[in-house]
Length: 413
Image (tube, rainbow, N blue to C red):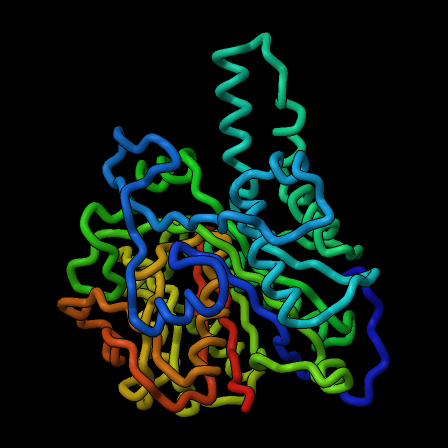
């Protein structure tokens, strides 16, 4: 990494969350999303941002931007050049920044994940190049802002900070692994604070690609249901302000929750299919829980990857069963993708915030779409949100290419 190990009195430092921002199809901000997840609402509708008339599936969870973007030192012209994903990132980051109370600083590491970055701008570039080959207006700007590093450099200007930028793009585990890398940096003394998260916007290429794989549901996204037929896509962003516990306490910061474990494992079984026995997913959960110092009987909730695809859900259900052992029937599990869709590079980051909400407000998020549970699911699936005492929550993210990630969160009293 870019930072030398800082001097600490202990071998490893505790890492807490002091700011969190979120925007999904449920709305912009912690409160509207908290209310929606507590009520188990679904946010799917017919796609309006691009043409899906030739696709099998035609619904998604589109995230609407606020009427006014957060106040910014950026010019209106600069903001106009951003694509939808870049604006989603600004909205979530502004909320996290306001919550953590950090001031402008130098050498603040950014660790973010996205799978598509500004792909929508790439589509615009292609259309103009094909249909208006002699028109060059806006093309250079599209090339520049298509890139994820440009989006994050814009965010740095927006917040008035500088520092190294790390960008991850490893499919559906991207958001989780971005947070995990930030956690490792602080835990091992490479940084005092890290701003991290994931962001993603829908575009025609992404939607058509998943549809061509026949991975999208043509009915209803039903994770862990015996008759599930695919995933549903969504978009949004989530940003977390991480810092060492000592740093947070020294300035009297409000702590939202603690990240106490992270595990990531590569599954070499298949490019797009998980191992049928859930081997790598199991190892990811084991590593995360061992680093957190907890056993399965201490887990009060698991936010599952739960895409709603036949192979993923069966594999993950078996991995959870193998990890939890005799305690599996006592651990509530749900996939919040049933409400806001699969956010790809932003999924793990959004689900991390959902776990923080569940711990802070002591409730179990519902998925509410299971009619006939898959026989592989011997754990209780949360079909109705309800109050519960939760001390630890796990969040799973498993992606194409065999990338698996698990985070463990602890309630902060």
